[in-house]
Image 1 (spheres, rainbow, N blue to C red):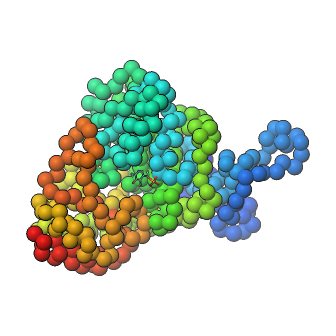
Image 2: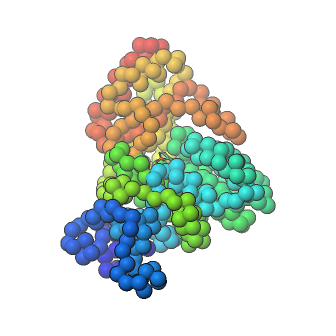
Length: 398
Ligand SMILES: *Cc1c(COP(=O)(O)O)cnc(C)c1O
């Protein structure tokens, strides 16, 4: 799948270049740089024989169009040579549920990291439980000690590195080595780093998913999910996608591809700006701790250095103990930081969170109120001034 125009392999090119040249068939696009937004269900066959043998590249809208093919090729080129293909689905949650349904059946057991995105847990505790799949949660920092939690029927392990609220960093290669020795597949939510900053499939992951709603789209204007399996996971995954009937809308496919072209410049800015703002926050008297794996004193730092080539714009902070009304005053007084769910767009966001509300096997006791920040593409001095205003309101309510 890592081919661009004229079937030239792009593996020798660096990631930033691959983001630009992959998934572009300029000749088929009649000279235009970008593919058309193909809206379509029916694909016509010229002869009865073509119909009988399903000749041709495209057969039915749900199974792919020139627009989806362009995005799939570009994403596969970014994931690297282990990627056997890319499934495009209508949301990040749909990517997670489709990936898990492709692996699991009644009577199976799945191990899920305690720091995963909350709707991932809800899917396991809801639909998977209803179909007779048992879920056990594990400590994100368990490493190879996960071996003790395996049962003869454990078929899958679900991880997220780092967790999108607590930023705890599981050792995915160590967990994957144990999983593979026990015949289980590893599904990884790589939304935080994207394949640009972490090639999950090269670290023992069998199916890497992304909420492309976040950094791939990059502009807070689409809901989108991608599923990238290795060769072992690919056949069951394509079957699940076909049988479940999931597919993405043409406009969203186009916007995801457009977002992907600028991923490298955006992520580099998000990374730099987030580290800058986090370093400024670390010096504030109101802040007890920064949860950001690129910080040398973060517990996940060694793993981040080993497995990642960059950090995105999302991190969390622990405030010194303060009454809830002080935190609300901070949230109400910042203007550039919007309050809202999701992240990965061009705009900065701030949200309070409490992992204790849903954790089941690890204790979340950070010792103060916690806030998650997404640093957007604004000027960092403006962002710091905005947070400064927030802290003034915070201190006035202490
Ligand atoms: C947002 C998010 C999802 C879900 O994506 P949607 O497109 O909102 O369904 C999954 N995982 C992580 C880590 C996310 O942040």
